Length: 130
Image (cartoon, rainbow, N blue to C red; front, side, top):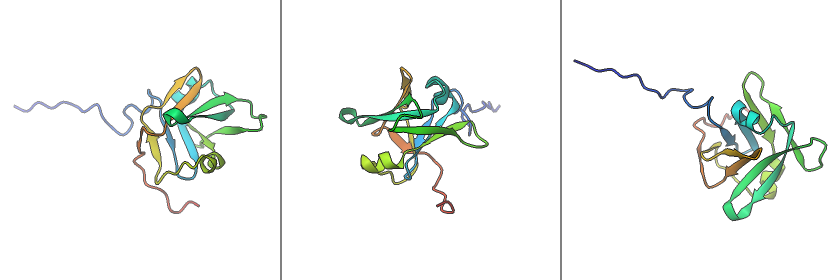
């Protein structure tokens, strides 16, 4: 007699009820809706650096602030993005491929991304996009 048990793992398992954040080699940080909501649905963020722990934080702030980055919705998706290529260049953050942050969390409204705790995001770079 065979016993069949359905797997709890699938293409969407854990993606909607957990915080998800990734960064691309072009300096694009993407977050899911849960993360965006926990941050307080900011229109803009300021990036803060914790060099001792190799971490960066996205702190909600005013879009009028001179060092803020706009947070925008991705069309056709429940995700949001921040284009911060200038920050990546300034801090010499280089990614070979799009990476997912395994310990991404929101602390007091600030998204914390530990650069040491990342894995490939699982989707190859799209060469047809410049």
